[in-house]
Image 1 (cartoon, helix red, strand yellow):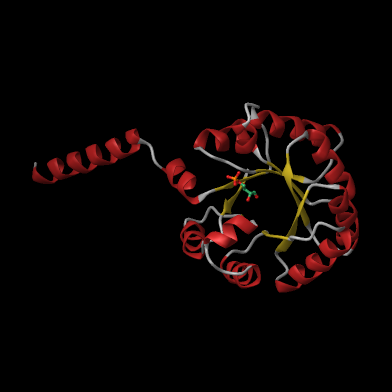
Image 2 (spheres, helix red, strand yellow; image 1 turned 90 degrees about the vertical axis):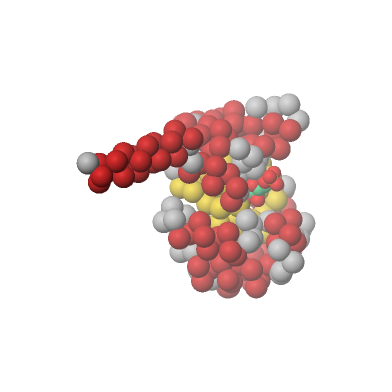
Length: 215
Ligand code: E4P
């Protein structure tokens, strides 16, 4: 499974990229607003750090506007893909952008039907929102499983990005269910690295090493 970071924070992106595990980045208008920056400046900076897909979200709600924004965003860097919010207008825009080799990440996916339609329109990625489904009492990870199954049944090559990841178990479930990608916030990536038994083991090995030096 590929790992993307879900943030617009440049320092966090730089740090996780330095671990050697980062395959891409997703941003959204809320994440950009948190960093008090603008979309273009932000994704340009990210493209100088990470060599992989970077999602930049369009804010238009009509197909013509989405297409116009998408073309502009794609000009920033070859790795930029255009995030469109799932709706009929976004399907129309996806068809046009895909025909121009501009990658679309269809976001705010909450049902397998939406994912299938987005893929049919030519989206390169679909982003089911796991955590936000959990929030309303549905099992978010089941949606990932349904989409992965449908795409496998029909050999659809649209990639599934498990999004709205809220804890390491979401990341684990995404991997178990065969998501192509999980886009994971910084603090959760940090949690995924550590285990108390690892820390305990390191301490013990160091203590024993010190003892063996003395003998
Ligand atoms: C996905 O691309 C979105 O940016 C993100 O995962 C949304 O997560 P949230 O539900 O925690 O805001």
